[in-house]
Image 1 (cartoon, helix red, strand yellow):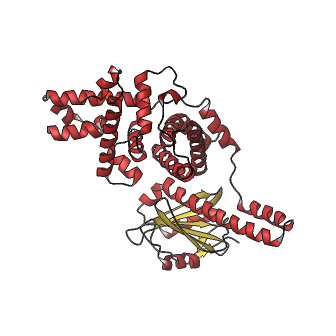
Image 2: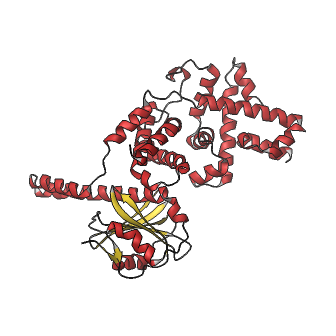
Image 3: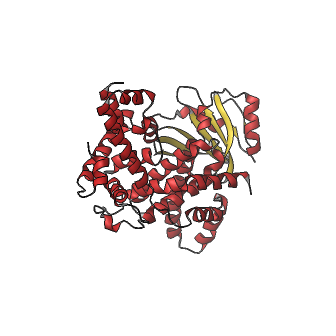
Length: 170
Length: 235
């Protein structure tokens, strides 16, 4: 197996989960998320010989996912109805509070959802998100604040879930 | 750190809290309570984003990659020619036009991806000596007839599977990424803006020259002229 192939496989093993999940939270559709992930990794393979620092692969992959999403789906995708927790597939026996949080995150406006999932899935700092998106750090902070604030409001409306209220109450 | 700064941090990026924030929380019960709630919300978000992955995702990505082969423009040209022979001329011309535009767009996309992947090239400060520059271009079968300016990086890359020259010219604050592509053959000069980058692709001798700069910058036509004049393409 060539060195390039080994690098590629290591990259797929390490990052395909995060890339898929980021894609899913952008497009909110499992099939589209997998298509985006496939396309992104295929592009990564084609340019891998130009990538010297593997530590930068994740940022490149996330940026590519976001751009591909914008190109392929954003303009043509039908507006999705507000998501219903009952319709979220493959719950895998997760608790209601996790599903409700996922649902709430998926309902955030895209510009808030994007910075939040970059922070949570990507593990990026505010400064790194600002660089990735090419926007000022202050804008990132504002979006993060609003995203978290909206989540708290959405979850506080989920009556009968003490765990959520505890997590989100102020 | 005061209460306002702590609160701001907890409401935007609690995971970025450092020693100073923790010290503040230890001495401020209300901020400590806020911090605990923010951390709880963060933990819940981290669980929420772990959506189940499609079955065999890694294997499917690797399988698709195994079928990918570098695109060979020359082979496509031959295929075009064979197909065009069997079609009406007008249809063939129209179709060819669409393909040319499509190929141009793909090349633009490729150059932008290369600039972003090979960010070390933009970070290099050089200057590259003329002998090192020649060494970098020789394996591609290219040479330079005359100086092209201050080169801060000289290397090679694959453009659509074909070995190409990759230079960065730095004569002002803005570095210009230059791609010398002996296996690309475009019929006209085209400029593009894509993903925050601005570029130009031009036919040159037996190959193609591509240049890319950050989107807000412009490409000096004199530099393009100089490159077109200076490159000695392989015969």
